[in-house]
Amino acid sequence: MIWPPPTPPSVPPFHTPWQPDRRQPSEPVHVTSISAPGPDWLAERLFEKRIVSLTGRLDEDATNRAAAALALLDASGDGEVQLWLHGVDADVDAAATLLDTLDLMGVPLHVHCRGDVRGMAVALLAPADRRTAAAHAGFHLREPQTSCAGPASDIATAAEHHEQQVRLLQQRIADSCRQPLDTVIDDMREHRILTADEARDYGLIDAVTGARSAEGE
Image (cartoon, rainbow, N blue to C red; front, top):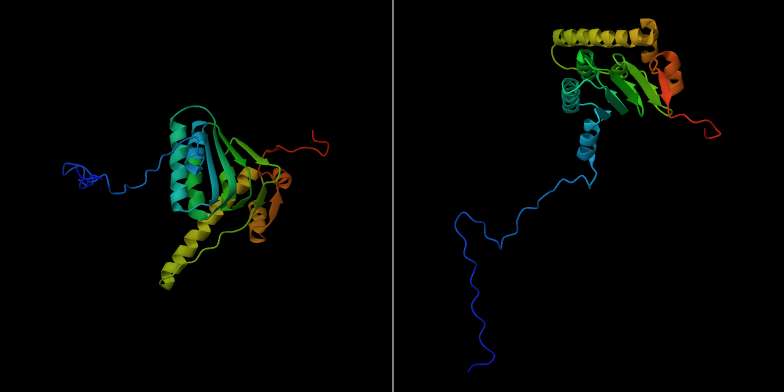
């Protein structure tokens, strides 16, 4: 008898050709859980409550996703849809795309500004049935900047189209605020900034929400 007994040779586990080798490290598995809050989880929860929340500068992808979400909510029920704006900025194309989507909605629309709203994103308030803002929201009226390259004729055509789009959006802002168009144009050229209370007086919003007095009422 041999002591200690020899160690048996290592035999790899049997597996068929279509089975992976269990000794090889597998790819990490990412599990989404509502117990781990994140942007996607939050967006889904808000969507269930018929709320679409926009944050930051709206690029083409964000604009298309927002337009699709708003259209889906419009088609899926008769209840009010809320659009929340948090520090949102938009160029002419993004604002025009979302404005067209909002104009087509057949359900009540409530736009609520929870942070600053800048540039042409201000036009997103125009089609709303109800327009509100948090007490510390701000409104930055300014014309969008654009740049283009190419032959002089193409640049001139693009500049003319851009100017027309800007005027259409400014007209929507003026109509919803009941302000003269020239006033809106001048204010955007001067980059005028309004507080929530000033925006209410200007006509951009109907009411300021969540404000408390010094006594904490």
